[in-house]
Image (cartoon, helix red, strand yellow):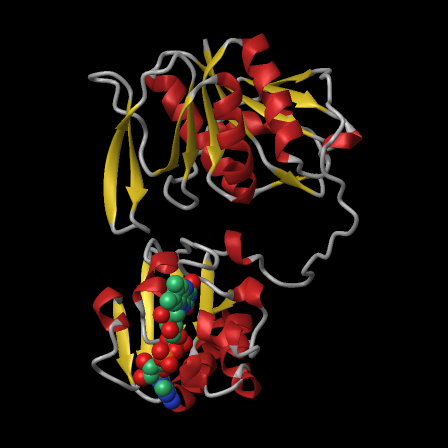
Length: 320
Ligand SMILES: Cc1cc2nc3c(=O)[nH]c(=O)nc-3n(C[C@H](O)[C@H](O)[C@H](O)COP(=O)(O)OP(=O)(O)OC[C@H]3O[C@@H](n4cnc5c(N)ncnc54)[C@H](O)[C@@H]3O)c2cc1C
């Protein structure tokens, strides 16, 4: 019996969310008095052994070109085979795009109970109960998992990364890789920007900015802070910003350490995607804007006056 953690990689680099999943998995293994082991699919740059510092005793690496691009069906099969071969009884993912695609398929394959969007380690005092977010982060549910194999996907930024001194044993594994049912014909990557899904700081703008031509207010502040940029759906619908920046119920759900909302009303559908942010700062000229109810800090004022002052202050503080 072991705890198996899927370590998600992109272009040979392990993603930050995977370090959270690894730290979480190591804690779950400690609770269950067993070992935490990682699984890495595809070609990764550099040595995997140092990932032992996240509490992993072993890393199973299926170093195969065919696994460099995510195909959730293929990945689910390879992870299922590895879980069976290694006797894993708990399998952990980050609840990011890859985790959301793979975990349910793996769950069906292994007939394993899945808790998606977990926010705490399982309580094993009476069974195996995992706390998760429900209703777009407005409530919690405690889910009891009774299957022999259990799968958990951990909400990004809901578990602190912890590091210890340790080196993992890296085990190169072979796998039967199914012929993919989907074929990737093109990959269009957004380059040179902080990826929104992994960003710790996010500056976001709404219709209060009046038009795409004023977006320098958002990007200047984001640049000064080293933050990613986001927007409300109304902004993306108006083509002021691309849709991959749209956050909310129908956009990306994010949980950065700092979310800066400029000229956004705070409609419930917007909040659904950002209310797990650790600190929310709202700038709105309307003191009755609903967003203030969800804010940790609020500035009632005109974004066109307030934001340049904040940007200047950040630059001064950073000496840039
Ligand atoms: C099914 C469904 C799904 C949806 N999904 C999403 C979603 O995923 N994400 C999302 O964002 N929305 C979503 N929406 C839309 C949502 O309901 C709101 O319409 C949208 O979030 C409004 O965007 P906004 O706050 O930018 O614009 P507005 O509602 O127009 O608000 C603009 C705000 O800017 C303020 N303002 C104006 N001028 C200034 C100024 N100079 N300085 C400072 N503040 C100023 C105003 O006081 C106002 O509060 C969804 C709606 C539906 C029905």
